Length: 104
Image (tube, rainbow, N blue to C red; front, side, top):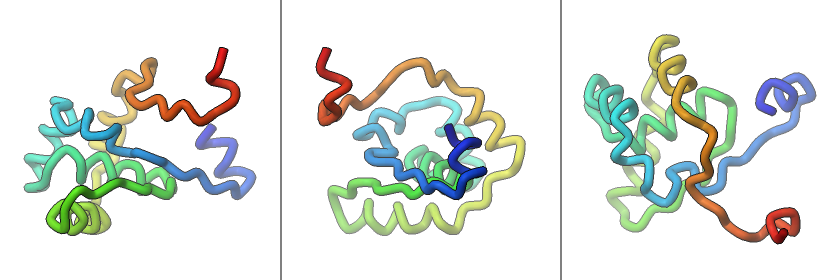
């Protein structure tokens, strides 16, 4: 989908890109975060932004809001992006239940 949208200049928006906090314990994101001196959430946002996806994360405090903005300064290496790209994507962490197609 990213490839198709990129070719056709269609912007994608990531709602809940931090999966309501479920990604903060991911070992890969944590390991990469340690290299950059940041948390898994910031790495997740930096990766999302590296894919030219608009991220709309929720922030429960001013501290988290500031951390989210710090993700804009993180430059992930090609190897780090590839590591994150390789993570399991065959499961949905957040189901907002707002799509008519989700209502079997």
